[in-house]
Length: 236
Image 1: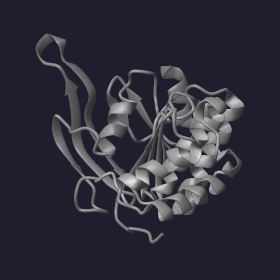
Image 2 (image 1 turned 30 degrees about the vertical axis):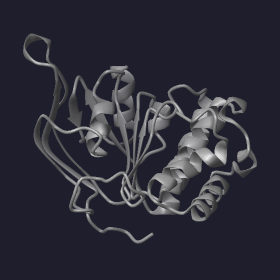
Image 3 (image 1 turned 45 degrees about the vertical axis):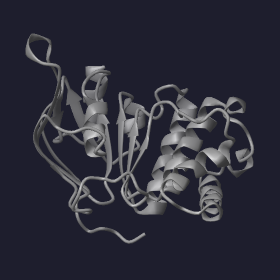
């Protein structure tokens, strides 16, 4: 896939507040940052620090209460189509009545891809994740790690230019979690896509090049590498 050569996301003093008055909660406070093409970023911090809200803003799933957010590579908010943003959530969220390949095919059909082409792309994605042997299995037959890899394959099949992963390893053991983050990095490399992973786990964050720290809604983009991971551990 051709690089956009433009930032994927730009935030200037972006805030997101839920509620009003004395009950208002500031989930993100005046965040300023840029997600570059080919970015490999871990957003680290304790649960409730605002990481998920920040990723939702990046993906256009939520709108800021104040400030400005832009997507220069597209010149418009993400559409949810394959050339935009793909999101991997903490839970695999697979349709229980559909087998693996049908689950991966489903978002492509919503995009208007033909059944034949969608099936082919779904199987290519499963092969990339090295789980093509699971194609005919139902979600109930999968382990937690396998289900999460299927959810990554589902995102990869849509060929996004930015992958957002919100605590994708939060429900997995360390060995499985490490494999899932390696799969995410492999997928981002194959697609020439940016990757932003929200995590409270410094061992997972260590796999990514840049560490941004969230603490009580405030984003610090000055920390990197081991320093950022240490800050995450201290905030947890």
